[in-house]
Image 1 (tube, rainbow, N blue to C red):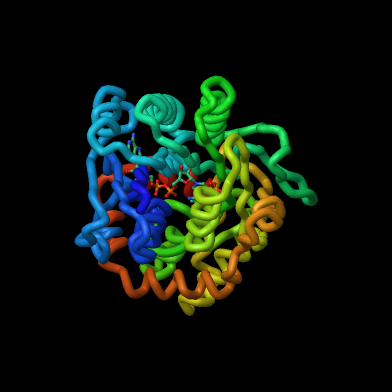
Image 2: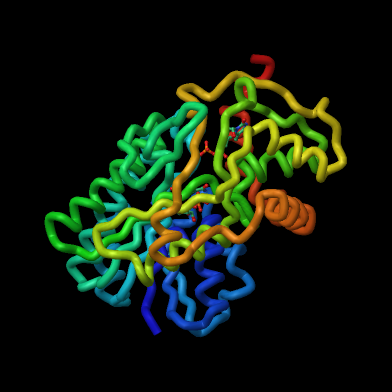
Amino acid sequence: MTRILVTGGAGFIGSNYVRMLLERGEDEVLNLDALTYAGNLENLAEVEDSPAYSFVKADIRDAERIQAIFEQHRPEVVVHFAAESHVDRSVLDATEFVQTNVVGTQVLLDAARRTGVTRFVHVSTDEVYGSLGDTGLFTEDSPLQPNSPYSASKTGSDLLVRAAYHTHGFDTVITRCSNNYGPYQFPEKLIPLMIANALEGKKLPVYGDGKNVRDWIHVRDHCEGVDVVRRRGQAGEVYNLGGNSERQNLQVVRGILELAGKGEELIEYVTDRPGHDRRYAIDASKVQAEFGWEPTMTFEQGLEETFRWYVDHRDWWERVRSGAYQDYYARNYGARLGG
Ligand code: NAD
Ligand code: TYD
């Protein structure tokens, strides 16, 4: 049994990862999460009674507390998901993105190194590479050219992780994955937002011309990829993970409308996101060649499964959408509608 500290385990990908580890039953998991608007312990209700699981509410920006937690729990491995993760929020205000993603990552690196952690897995994003034209794929050697405050802050964290390896010989690995979808994704990102709006008969706000391309991966495939890198990745290396499923946003939205049995009149073209990256696409051949990892789910399968999950868990997304999220929705879309 390895003692694994997972940061951000109450969020979308982190909770899927924690569930996967506990279902596998090979490791002890300490979930460290500040429970921001995006963190919800309900996501882990099925596994929270497991004797191999524990939770601590803490903010990764709080260096003293993080150091004390590492001294008390002595994790062997850290898998770091905690972040501010939504591009549109970073456009409205970048402060928390710098504090959590950059400062928080350094706080964790310091505490982990000082207390003898043997491996630090940093979960990053393909957005650090910037935007592609109509052709080409991001490889691990593509230049880092982030365009949004979110991706710039993730790039900052990647570089601090790199520096911890080069300066201190600390064992780190970085994964850079494409856009995730699946159960427990907060309904502010494209797929869950569009599913929830379609189910409620609300407008589906498509930014710009709707032809931006993302490479979609089911969250379970991403979690398997992170875990393969945790177990087998080489210290100091970066590993791309992707879904081999490039789709234009409009294709995604039309697929959701079809599953919901709703018509195209629900689509509303709204003012584009400032600095909106045109296309992301990942070359994940390194991790495939080295570890045999590849995504298992087709986008159509995954989208249908995800759509059913949101139909079956309406109470979950109605609850998480209430309260603070309503203020954000008004701020982000209020000025855009009719644009
Ligand atoms: P999320 O927003 O759903 O979850 C983030 C979690 O981090 C929440 O539980 C939140 O409470 C916690 N958190 C935020 N600030 C914190 C702080 N200061 N201290 C402690 N906990 C804090 O995000 P997600 O979509 O699950 O993404 C997880 C990670 O994966 C992020 O690092 C993100 O950059 C990366 N990633 C996401 C995607 C994607 O498509 N969602 C793709 C590639 C990489
Ligand atoms: P998002 O899920 O926010 O992920 P990211 O920006 O990190 O790739 O957005 C995915 C794509 O969908 C992106 O091109 C922006 C677009 N989008 C919309 O058109 N409307 C929306 O309401 C949202 C949230 C996103």
